[in-house]
Image (cartoon, rainbow, N blue to C red; front, side, top):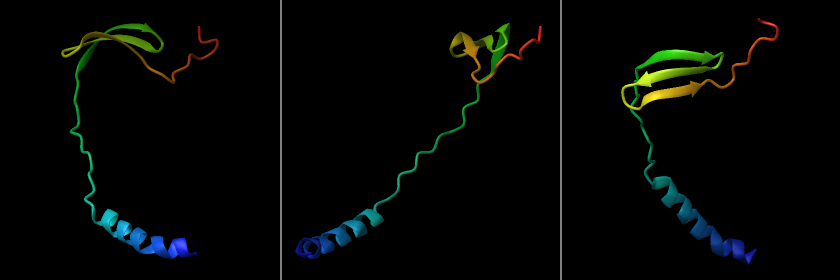
Length: 70
């Protein structure tokens, strides 16, 4: 109990200091990228050409083929 009485003022001061600190918020500008689809490899993979990075192979996750579709 004595320890709590000793630490209470220090914890209260710490709470006031932390509360007064400025909040740093990261803001990001939106990025717009234009790419051209070169080829559809299969149901979830495409080849694209981007002006910045050149030719890329992109695989879209979460797409599953329908059973017995062919």
